[in-house]
Structures are given as structure tokens and as C-alpha cells.
Length: 232
Image (cartoon, rainbow, N blue to C red; front, side):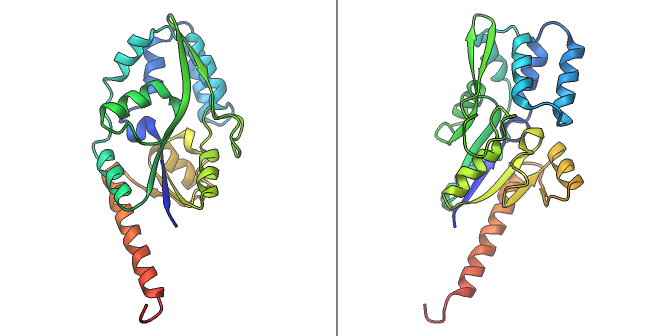
């Protein structure tokens, strides 16, 4: 059985939450209201789709400004090596983000990782306005509240017959965590899983993820070898 690694982007592959930092830098108007909306999202009272629509309505930034801002973000230095090693083992790595495609695409391509399959919310720039779009909202298994519901990506990987490992750090990973075969978590996601009794293995970065992946692959190979009939 092939393994699919569903990897969150903001705060997981990227060292910071690019979307949140972009909103903080370029949003105009009532900061207290934006913080109240973000808190409602973290508490589970508001879906990310509604939060994204509200935040984009407050942001004033051009495409070029937004892209220049995003280019200042660093990726986890262990991610590229992990992705290459996973491919060598015949595993699939997918980037699944509830952020925006323009910066996910840009940062992955700058790191030489453009061919990786990825999914994120879209955004169209009209002057200094950001107009969001949610192309995955109709996917089977989507909750209807997330912009890019990761539960739907678990369902798609399962439909291919894959075993699914979720790698994430925050609220956007909650829909997928109870459904994945294995969860690697840090930050808010790790606390949330522990509060709800969801098994989650902690990690700090993708060097840890690769160590876990190698150990798992070795255990699977050992189990397969032990189960093989004598003389096979």
C-alpha cells in the first residue's frame, strides 16, 4: 500500500503563516474585529472560508506587493530532502493548504519543488483588492466550512487505495486529523489532538518527519519480509 503524505504549508512547510502575516501587514480598518473573527475560527465557531472572505475584504495590496512580501518567507530546510526521499521510496507527497495558491506556488517553485502536487485557495487581484476563490469546495468529503477542506484530500487519497499521513500544525488540519491513518503534529494541532484523544506523533521540522518516515518504511519492510512464505 502506497503512503500519501498530506503536508500543510503555512507554519509547517513554510516557517511562518504566510497568509496570516499578509493580512496583518496589509489589512485596513477594525483590527479588533479581525482578531475576534480569527479567535472565533480558532475556537471552531467560524469556518475558514468565512474568515478568508472577511479578511480579504479588509486587505489592500497589489499582486506584486503581495508576492514580494511572500518571497521573504523561508521554507523548512528539511522539506526538500524529505520530499525527494519520499519519492525515492515510492511515496506521494502532496501540499494541501488553506492559504492562497499564489504564494504556495511561488515559494515551492523558488525552492525547486514546483512539480509537487498541491492544492490551495485561489485569489484574484483586482488593483489592490484580493478576491478569494475556493475551487475544492465541491470535493467529496469536504465539510463545507473550510476554504480547502483537508478531509476531502484524505478521502481522495483513500479512494486511490493509499495510506494517509497528515503533517500539520494548526486549525486548518482539524478536519483531516481524525480521518488520517497517522498524524504528525506540532503547535496548536498537537494540543487539539491530545485534548480529544487523537493519536498524534510530535515533530519539530521535516528532518524529524523524514526520520519517522524511514523508521516506518523499515518496519513495513520487516513485516512484509517476515510474512513472506519460506522460499518465496
